[in-house]
Image 1 (tube, rainbow, N blue to C red):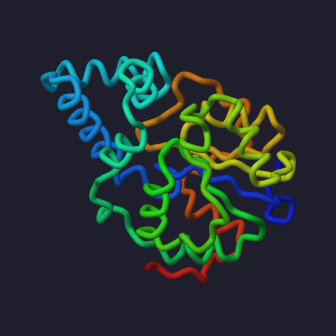
Image 2 (image 1 turned 90 degrees about the horizontal axis):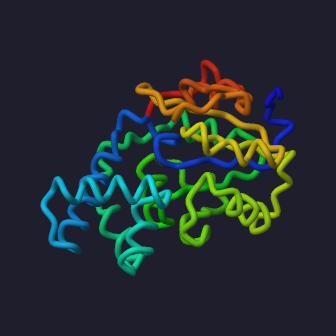
Length: 227
């Protein structure tokens, strides 16, 4: 499926490790904060807390969902705690700002994180003005991607016609429901790989460097300047 700006009404972007480089390694900060939260909540040592954190991720889809199901944790309190991180490692990007500004169509964020976290990251990146909305884990009723139902809710909320939409995402499994709905799919693989052993037949385009790809399709080659 060819992806051209003229054919797309709505661009759906994942946030973390997609709209900023995976080399920023924000998740390592979030991961440590999750461990600290569990240690305090359950009075566990770091090793036991880490093991529980990963088990909940495997069994419930996210650590948060496991803590909600097993311990009745307030999800908003959890997200505020784990997203209290240093965003100084996220670089401002004038080229990305320019490319998104030139790209026609609506742009929305679809994230397993929170609205607050997304807003802070977009501000740090210098691209917040280009997005018409954020569909976060709260809007998904705490059901993380790739659970298919939140994809339908996203489309209803923003009146998205899937066959006129493109989803951009770093986790290849999260593009499966988008493809099933008829969306175009763009995979942004992290350098260390994030395939999860899943075939990529449902991927229409691989963007090793999302910023460079957006600059290209927005027709800005040779005009963007580093910020």
